[in-house]
Length: 289
Image (cartoon, rainbow, N blue to C red; front, side, top):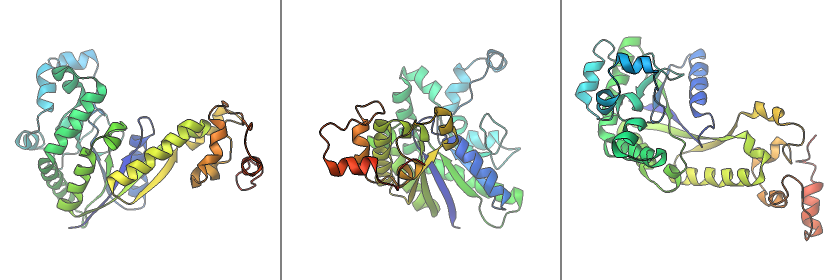
């Protein structure tokens, strides 16, 4: 059985969960059943005090959530074998790491770690239990196909954490994806989201371009880079970006942004030769219309 899917990655706040939700709705509208796999342990439910009181607090419950136990998970879903449920997530998830495997808040509390250290611990925990993760995923997909009477597996969207360290200094995400490709025979494409607000700051955009390149190289998957929240650019006012969107989408000749690094949005042309000045000021391809 061959699976197909998309891996959504990108910095925190780039819109990965929103992207998964939108893709799921769109694909379902065109007749392709789609489910999301939330592998972000920080994308968890933070209940109110009333919720905590009704559940007897977080001590025992949260500790149990941080243990990967396939028998317990199967027992919890006897009435819903596919594992799908109504949850805090904006999309329909067939597997939610923060509920079924491990969550960030319980790790931070039990191991006295900060958010970044705790998230790295969570991802490495999933890395070391990849076989169990794959087993859970296969069982739930099979049950979902029987429940919905599907002839082909649903398209899978993977919602990953956004912390940069996971894609620059850690290999756990790369290992998890490699194991999924090998064990599930899944064809994956990576979608790297970058907040379009980065276009308004030369240093941020150059950093985002470097991060996108690093992520593509490390994940070793076919990849596309997407500017998210483009509709919000008009709210930043006229002149908020130095060139039109074509320049940032094509992401070439990044040296043209260098004069903006120290100028807070104003071109500092002292010391620039005439050729560079022409490329910055007069290249009609990227002049703002």
